[in-house]
Image (cartoon, rainbow, N blue to C red; front, top):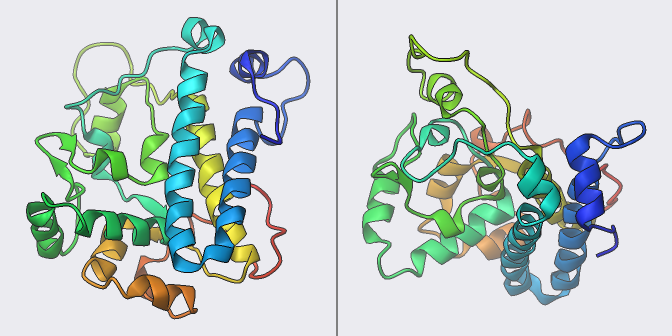
Length: 258
């Protein structure tokens, strides 16, 4: 890890720092640096390396988040999130993912013996929300979900219910709160940019895309990975999320960390 991360830096991040707030939190910087380094080592391996790079990014980010959530600073200082299995309100919004994540998830999903009903749900999807993988109020691809899904920990599930699912706010109880845990968001946002940046630096287009329609476009096209690697556009133009993932200049590798 090129950016130091330990319980002390976690505590500083939780408290907002003891001096002027940094532009990038130490947690986000650690995730970015670790993922970028791991992905960079994979790019000489072609498309197998590209797919392995996504698995690496997922594992690194989950490991870092696991370390953070067990530090005394987090356990004693962070407010508990309202998220739990069976909630599912956050699955009623558009989900962004990097192009390479979508290609990886498509390949992993196709290979699963139990994937047939999930593929049928995806094939039948034409528009709208909630996510097609929200089954019985739980994510049916939880271990494969994009990085952006992994970092959302809201304090008040009622806020998600009213904001994402567009339901009426409760008549009673305290005011709704938009507060969320910044630490997981920093981890997985840092990982997203750490994943995409080496591909851009190597000349491969890796935009943010709307996850479900992008996945549907390639789910039955295993050849899409090789086509994307060679520079062919494999996702419909309408799936690009220009407002979600800032464009990076190919071949430069100088884009800021987000």
